[in-house]
Length: 537
Image 1 (cartoon, rainbow, N blue to C red):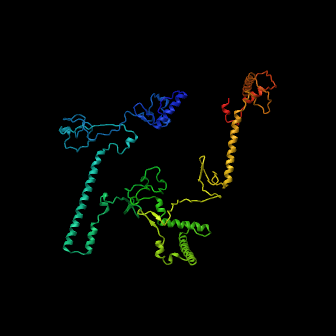
Image 2 (tube, rainbow, N blue to C red; image 1 turned 60 degrees about the vertical axis):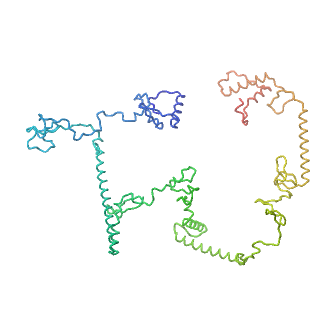
Image 3 (spheres, rainbow, N blue to C red; image 1 turned 180 degrees about the vertical axis):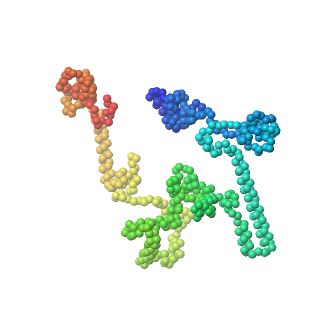
């Protein structure tokens, strides 16, 4: 905040000011405006936006950060070159004896010395020049571009454009001339192979003279080669076409493939749903898992596994040795695989190499008669096959004769054979059903007996019993008045324990403890294991 004077603020005003600053930073409140009506950036720190106390600034402003002590005599203007002030018709006393101007003398006159000066001829009086004086600062005196007219550079641009147009026109005329000569030579039938090669060499135009728009969209970089202080230059082309879209711009979704700017890698495919024929980039994993990259990966894995098994092999230290050992390993592995295959075929035979089965068996022909109706349904000769699911059917476990889910009762599935609702239980048969029914009847009888006993129960006489002890006499009843007085004494005792200064000098101590005192102590005591202890008192 760009507050000027630091005035005293209450805690509430300070809190509101902080909330307003946070709202301005979040864009929820309009920015603060200075004296000129310009908005003040809310992210400017306070030590920069606060004006010093000695400026006595009453409104928020940032003028104290600018150069407010400016020199009124300082100006950025420059000499008006060639400007004239007054043109006299007759010679004036004290003017230049050569040209007649009042702004200089004959010694510093810049005109050609006349044979007879204007002082004697009184003709061709030169006008007075415009004399200006400027008070420039340190940088203004040493500014080499001070007073430079930028519009004068347009003449330089026009000169270079005219030169380029002339060069382009000349190259086009030379090319047309060479082509015309070549056509004339072909019509006449003369000339050998050497002449044709010379003409082709002449048609090759230097790349420096070709327009940049014809450079096949490649960046042209000029750098010096094989020289220390100068010399010949070579043209180096950057083969990356700048018109290609960067891979991190192919999919701007935040949940798409992750791009690591440090390594410039994007392993996943940024456009997995696009047509493979239309996209030219499918992620770095496409190149990691294909071609020679996959072979190099297998070579590294083989080197690591061989080193773990005790062989002296290292991929970085001796790459040729590692590659040779890997090739030998592949050859030995293929031989071992073919030998194992031959051993199995010798022992069990090769059904694929045997003679073909008879045509009758392949087509499945038999003497079985099947009768169909006009609609193609089977009437006689073959039972209708029930469709089978992919799950196991009719599998009986734990001596059950029915599958799980064949019985339903009280919103529970079970077995029909024993009426059990436990999935992995053992089947008990008819005996289990009888035992379950007997247990159910016994539970119903117990519930009915309990309900009957609750209805006939006699109400207990309402009296307040003490809860401060465990073994209580049956005839103990607390007095309400004495209990209220004991609670007041207990509160006073707790206050005295907190602050001993409230205890009087002459204190009478009573060792007699009544039942009401014990009850008051129990009621005021803090139970540390009680979860509601903070809400008791």
